[in-house]
Image (tube, rainbow, N blue to C red; front, side):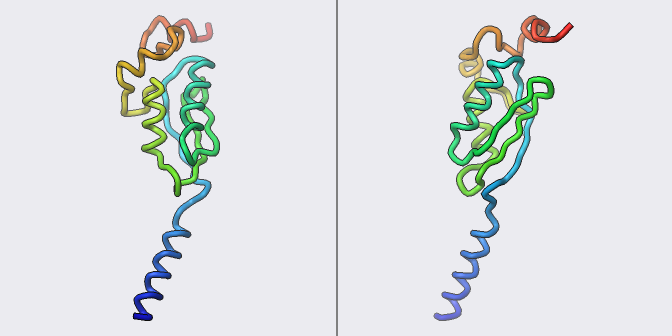
Length: 118
């Protein structure tokens, strides 16, 4: 019985240390403007466990720092998709995409062209 208790304590300690309070990740997220940036970052920061989120308009890269004891990349992706923004390899639902402002319709060529510096 004593061996079982020691084994259980060792396993718990190993699992505790295996989790990362400051895990880092990045992903590609579609958008075109400052309003998109604010919406994407807000969706991430409203996810429990996300400590830092910044999205680049130029590169479309979303950089994250999060507590992987509280959340994971899939959960964060779901929040971004729910906010109406596509993540590399996954599309937001038509309903979520329809909720973004007209100037943020990143799937439309004329909107993208309007946000491209000339």
